[in-house]
Amino acid sequence: MCREQSRLRTYSVSRVSGIAVLALTIAFFMAVIATPAAQAQYTVLYNFSGGADGANPHVGVTLDSGGNIYGTAYAGGGGYGTAFKLVHRGSGWVLNPLYSFKGKGANDGAGPDAGIVIGPDGILYGTTISGGGNEDPYCHIFDGYYGCGTVFSLRPPPNRPETPFSPWTETLVYLFTFDPDGAYPRNSFVFDHAGNMYGTGANGGNVFGVVWELSPSGSGWSEHAIYTFMGRSDGGTPESGVSFDSAGNLYGTTSAWGYGDTGCCGTVFQLVNSGSGWTENTLYQFTDGNDGSIPYGGVIADAAGNLYGTTTTDGVNGGGTVFELSPSGSGYTYQTIYSFAGTAGQQVGPYDDLVMDSAGNLYGTTYLDGRYGWGNVFKLTPSGSGWTYASIHDFTGGTDGGSPRCRLVFDSSGNLYGTTSIGGANGYGVVFKLAP
Image 1 (tube, helix red, strand yellow):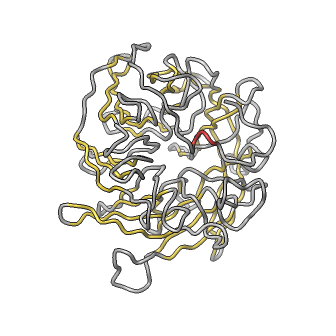
Image 2 (tube, one colour; image 1 turned 60 degrees about the vertical axis):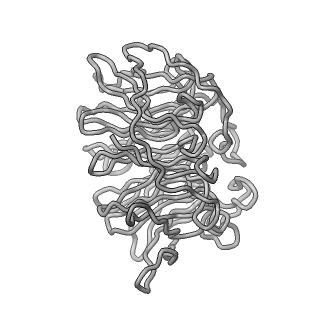
């Protein structure tokens, strides 16, 4: 898929609309062994109603030390999404809609398309892909979703005791303006040890997106773009967030550009802090072939410095890939460790980051792969010189949900939590738990 070389007036439709595909059988690929599904115990913790609680959670959830669950829903609430908290009470879970975004007119943000981050100060932070009061025509996704996006914080209500429907206080940390600071922040950001935030804007800057830093400044925050993509060999349209390694380098992906001059197919990049600024290194350019293309998720690293990530489409079976980049001399060596079934050009594969457990196993979700074509939760286990694949839950699109676009998260007992963007009892998505 190619991206326009001019300023984008609309957000990538491929992330917002569903794709009707039939899941195909999974074949052998390289050193990966396909195994029968090892289904885990699956439980729906909450069904969204499309009302005050929200609708269509696009991303995963965050757990605090007490086991409470925080997340966002892209729509519902006041019309433009919600931030929520799930508390375990008795044998079930109670949802508290922390904040309902009001969109145009209120200037509080619209369409939270990233998870909640618990800051070092204990405050909740997040982003909205739109809203914020800037009605630049280049920051118009669709009706009501005006503005280039925001970073916000949420604090508990000042009056105690809190009730399940007490709204929290939202503070706008930053309003994006497109140029030079970027636009459309759609993935979670990270904090460094000094309390600075780092994230991406999928558009803006020099049209092709930016990596940004927000630093505490007096009683507020100051923002600057630490790297502006050029839409050439460095890539463009960074849909993913960024992650740190132990040396303080940042890593991420772009979903477009990089290979040739066609707008295809995305890159993996590194940003190295030299003290006076950041230097960008393109670690890999996807080729629209057996290696996959259009990565929406970022990359994670293991203790040896190997990077793991995903693509949404292409690969030998057409449905996206899981890949590994291993340090090799002055660069990295690329290996596809799994290829999902699908049709090339249709983004059925993983939409968010992988997670790794203490044994080195990788876990993730696919959007429209799996036995029933509504996505799945998968596990990849190191096996000799390769990896063994298992699907641990195949979504049906019914009461269990469908089309997960989330990154999974572990609790201290090894249970996995995530969301589906649709399905469930009311059709608006679910929060789920998978027990080993």
